[in-house]
Image (cartoon, rainbow, N blue to C red; front, top):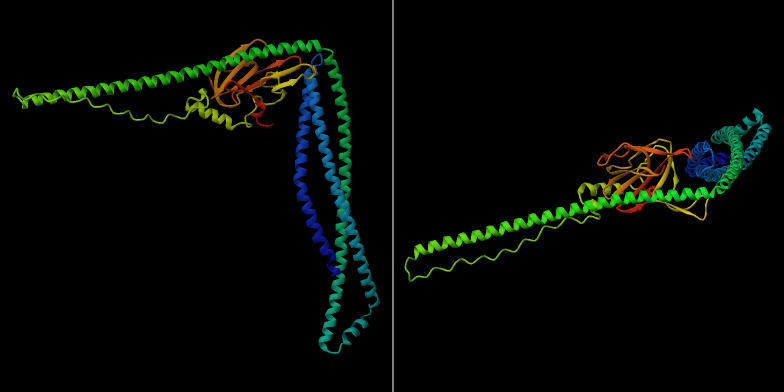
Amino acid sequence: MKKLIPLILVMWLVPAVLSAQNNNQQSREELEHRKRELQKEIDEANDALRETKKSTKESLGQLRALRDKITLRSRLINNINEEINFINGDINTAVRDVKTLQKDLDTLKAQYAQLVIYAYKNRSSYDMLNFVFSAENFNDAIKRFQYLKQYREYRRRQAENILETQSLLNKKIESLQGQRNKRSDALKTEQEQRATLEADKKEKDEVLNKLKGREKELIADINKQKKDAQKVQLAIKAVIRREIEEARRKAAEEEAARRRIAEEKRKREEEARKAAIAAANAAKAANTNNANSSANNPPPPPVAAEKPKEEEPAATPPPRREHVLEATPEALALSENFEANRGKLPWPVDAGTIIGEFGLHKHAVVDKISVENDGIILGTAKGARVKAIFDGEVRAVVVVPGSGYVVLVMHGQYFSNYIRLQSVAVKKGDKVKTGQTIGTASTNEIENLGEVELQIFKGAAKQNPALWLRRK
């Protein structure tokens, strides 16, 4: 049994190590993936901060970039701490394995030492031959000879087990040292990130204090932006209202035409029925007069007008559309396809970040004021291409003072609206495809970046565009 200890040890250690590796592999890969993504986003925030710093004075863009960096770096530090916890677990496991292997190695060495001592004491060839030939019979001698042979083989295997166990122990010790070095590097990285985080927080506080000193200027900008947004909303709602009214008018005209055609058909059928009855009566009267020439025979009564047949029930009307803008099969299919792509629509710019969230929010500097966005504001490169997020038809291209060009694309009962465009490449009535360029982003000189606002409407109801776009 003792000679099986190293084999059992290896059989126990290998599955245990593999199981631990399999259990942790996915989590480790997720950590590494998150770490790379966070570092990428931090680099993007640094790029945005460098661009905004080119401005002559502090801006909301600088504050936003710094806050993004702080949030992302905090997540990165948490990610590193999770990695350190994994490494600590590996170190603890490796320490236990080293202790177990060392203990078993000591046992093997002690057993082998006993074998060596016994072999030394019985090293004489005469003793071995005497042991074999002192058997009572030939079979017993064969058994004794086989025993000696097995004993030598067992001693050889013991020596090999010691070497294998020693090799496994050395690998475990080497792995343990590697894990400790890895933990040391991770701790160093974590400390560096914390130092950078504190510097970012300090810079953010400085920018915030300088911006608070320009509160009156910021409030004036907020009020101007609100007025500009109201103008945009009035223009957009006017277009949507016009489209709805036009769709209703067309639907009413189609219904009136259908009823007029049905009424004319009914009149023609009625006149034809009456004419047939009159002709039948005249023919019958003539036949009767010829057959009954005697004056004593009165003429037969005229043919009674047949009772008009009851009209057959009209065919089952088509299913009622959810919205008047889905009155045609094409428009309905477009709406359904648009809805099916919720959360999977492409971004309208090749590279950019959300710098203005949808809905009502407290201002980043002036706490007593709230700002409301009817869509999401995307920061991108100056003059960047702005693309359609789905197939549709351009229903309006208008210029709104303070907001540049505004393009409305209709997708059934949905509208995607592109605001703050510097130039446009489409006109009303154009059919556009997903990814087709419709214009270029405007430039925010204060923050030194390009801007475009994306709005999505379902009929006249605003939607949160961030929920419709695919995650980056």
